[in-house]
Image 1 (cartoon, rainbow, N blue to C red):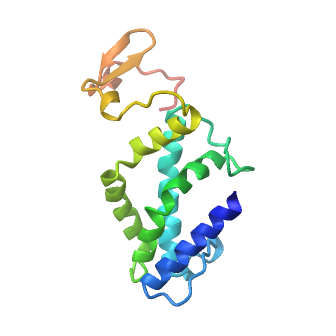
Image 2 (image 1 turned 180 degrees about the vertical axis):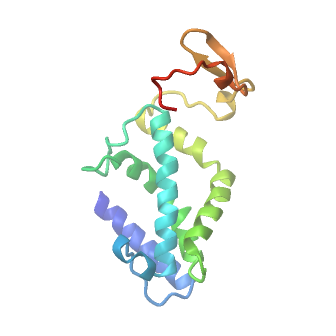
Image 3 (image 1 turned 90 degrees about the vertical axis):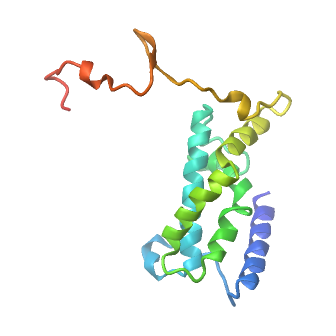
Length: 179
């Protein structure tokens, strides 16, 4: 399965390289020679890292294990990589190739991704896709149905507390705590 995914991504690389006038492109991730990499590889690394972080947050928020992948295995981030692969062809890969002429492709990739993630509502999409993957027969909830107008904090002794209040003033200094 991973071999088929690799072939699909290589074909996408070739298509986007042609579209953006790049004569030869080879995916290269070399942390030891970071500054000598071409702009597309730098942008792709930065964009994928941002995507992995976003997916990781969603995986953890849903109470899933990032290590229990379906396709990827042998890493603590296997499930994160599985889910991130659903979005790379649509988001990070085209963005990276569009930044081939950028003087600062890492920065530009992160800035453009922020807006792109917001526009395509990536986080609710990730949550929905994970839920469909784990429980395909369960009814799916829409993002609008799961939002709330009121946010509360939870205290184990006091229960629900209003948000937006600095409760730090109520703490008494404890000399045993080094903060």
